[in-house]
Image (cartoon, rainbow, N blue to C red; front, side, top):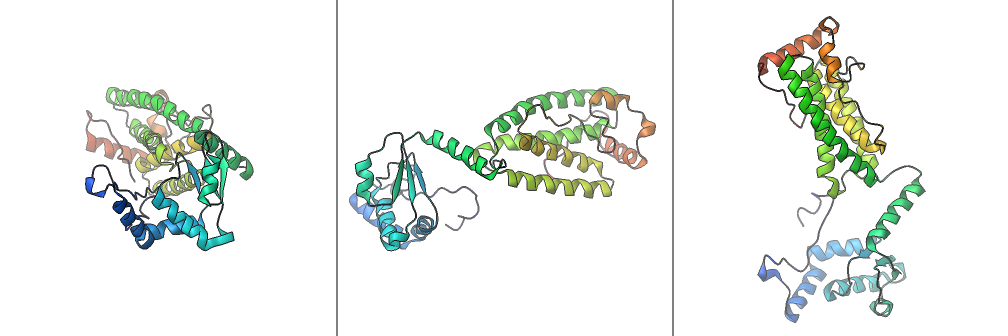
Length: 296
């Protein structure tokens, strides 16, 4: 319970763990002790708070655990007519059993996955804006990541072949784009990136970082942040055709591919940019590929 607020997704285990045999409930005495802990302990207090203040949807759950059922029933008795309605979602519902619980349960006889998909669709339509990002947007990000990885390797090869200093900034940008898409992919199951408001806040945060680094003549970090920001914007766009540029040097938006960088005249490179990339190149040497770490 000391770490209950350290995660946005919480799992409360009230019956112990199979890896810890001493914690498993097996006898009637075990269940009696567990009920006592739920009534008087910290976990029980936390559950009571959820039961009385939240609308609960039960899915994939039989609702036949005696300890939890007694806890819910006791709270329903205390709340009386002010008890919140709860929803019980299952493709096969025993209506007689639900009535016997004495709880204010609204049965929804359908598949749990289908119900949640319909809930998300209805939620978004009611808001009028896309508040929960679609599954297609996440699929698009994973597809784009494959393409970016391939192009990043191509850019790295060109850097080793030509020693073109401007490619240092292109690689930093692509590192940011890769890291954003990889994190979106890795954290997909957590639900962290499904809330468009959260993603929009991140986009604005990276915009502030970009402006800060540009004012400091630090395009190495600015390009990385632009790449990361564009990865987030691609998730929000929900359209695979609206893809971010594969290269972004910030100081010249017309240069959006590796071949264009190779052909770019050195005379057009601002002095501050030239000094920065020469310094980075000197630190690397001619046989190493610059890589921006996944943080700023």
